[in-house]
Image 1 (cartoon, rainbow, N blue to C red):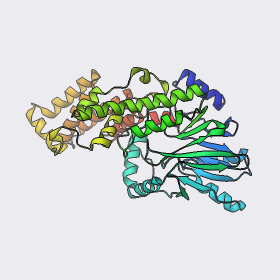
Image 2: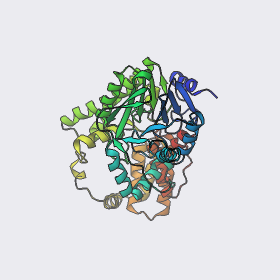
Image 3: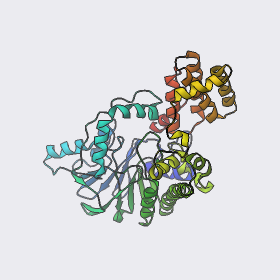
Image 4: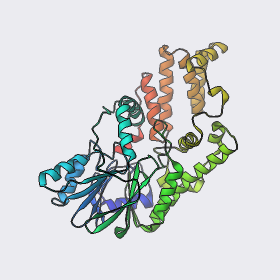
Length: 431
């Protein structure tokens, strides 16, 4: 098995392969450069060694935080942790801090500071309020409708909130911590000048940026791009990302940061330009494109999020939920609309499903699934329509690339009684 540094070089020079997904977890804890350590996982942990103290960045998820703690203590059994930083409050990043707090109490050390953006508290409060909803949407997104377990969690709250650029001394090393908005409104990223290293959190993740997630709260493409360009000005040699392997080398770092910023900025600029012309969302979705030079970057592939989802989120940020189609301002229910359409068509429900199957065979998936939805909504109790709709979505999932799309389509298939058999990209990411 290659070392982490060797694997990172392979990923950059050769790109992902069938057995080398961008988020593949090596589950190792290795030194990337002097004083810079990295635990490769589905979501990564970064560690800064300051000589007499340690800084832990993103301690883990509930299913891997203990392993990461043990990996650190296998190398550094007696060095106290000065602080634990949450780059944001997503569940794959923000658990495990309690292990370091308990350890400090047991050893008589100063308890580590828990550093996070002030907005992380509102996030944790929202998660507690909407635990049931989050179980539903995350089962769709990540498991194709299969259970992801309880969303009710105990959160370690920050002891120090970072709302402005802040310096922190960790032994002999100075760390600069910066608040940001991007994938979340509670983001932090770190710069360690003496080590020429940036911890990006999920502001860089080796895929098209997660700026459009259709089931989650608002994301901020323009602010995100600005943060990446700010990072680029620092001339770092190493990126420690939230997902995927490190990037090592100044030219590679520059390419990763600038290209991702351009990807986000072009989507926002084009969308806003058309919004300012009074164009409805449906037209914008058909006209806004990502330049081919960026689409070819292997670290900007739509394996998690997709450009059209990002466009929708930009519209939502600047324009609200009304899409510019007047009938959609106060629309009929899906069921009423479906019943009316079926009445207008001879053998309506059956004819719609037959046409849906024909269109699917021609890979006209968008129209095929819409017709199948209308047929189903006209009579949700019809078992034959349910099964045929489920089979359509199961087959469509096989030709999609992004985790979010595959998960939602597989979830729909499961709801119709069809057990999905496509390889969900999240399963590939976990492996």
